[in-house]
Length: 407
Ligand SMILES: *Cc1c(COP(=O)(O)O)cnc(C)c1O
Image (cartoon, rainbow, N blue to C red; front, side):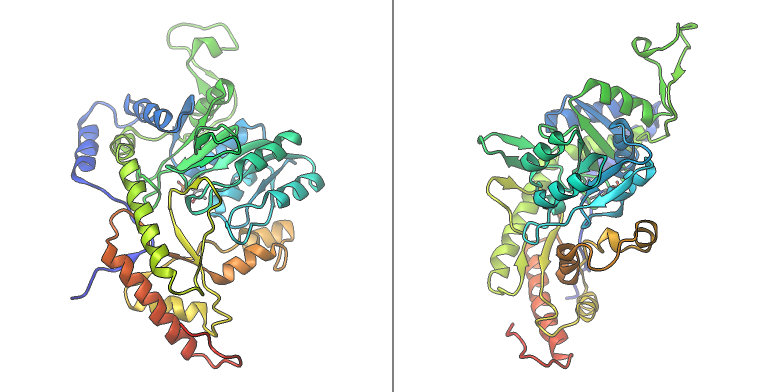
């Protein structure tokens, strides 16, 4: 029986999600109503942060987080070259320049030792933006200590990591989003992420001043809170624009979906964790496939299931293999083309091949296997079976000078 095509990620929408959205559509407020703050309360309750600001996308959330952190013209911001474009683009929007710090080849996360090097030689670094790659928390204790020593803010790009947590060296457990080791944390609710609002995102923080500024920036730089006014109020209609802001609001209809979805987050993350464990057992038979190394005490949200396959050593072409997988109805994905190799970044900042060897080596080998709550055990089995048989084909299809590895 032909099975459905398996993509690398997909949303889980259930009947009660549909009902929640329909109810919002029938309510008085499609946007700027009560559901956004209700959603924000749930984000706060889940992450443990004191404040949350829901936005129209994760990218919008990153943008206003950068401005709120005081990043502006001429500043530098350190992030990982192995991330979605938006992590680095956010610094451009704020008028700053991204500086990349190479990854650790085993955890796939930014290497604190590289952050330390880059922060010393790229003055003034205003912020460090670690990305919790695939949902696995980055080395936050080290990154936070380095950033604070150099007076830089820390903005966690946790777009992969809603539902992740990690244990510090004193044994305390921190939920990603609690901002225990950062100034702000950013999430995305794009359909492939842990929960969805179609498009959407959020910033969490424990700093009241950052919170107030984020709220203003989300909506045209305008405040209606009398306590925040610079000038005397003219009357009950009065509002003030205090800086140029944006329309980065999340509509209530989308917040209704977010409220319904966040209640399922634990279930979604535990199913992702089950699938990851299943992959790990199945792949252990094929030692040429390297999985992401989770250091002691880290609990991933498993947004992705990234693996490294040494295509070159196997005498296989990654591109042929990728096409073969698609032809059997399995759609892996590559995360990511290193950001510094994008034409814009080469042109604007002079980056090029060889600048970040670990990121580039990872790009040559990385593929993300399908993982999402609706993926069945049988489908996960078919993915591994498909991977192994197509690798064998892709290496057989290629003339090789060295002996082919047995698969
Ligand atoms: C998805 C994602 C973003 C952007 O989120 P959008 O909601 O799509 O704007 C930013 N950074 C990372 C690492 C992401 O995966």
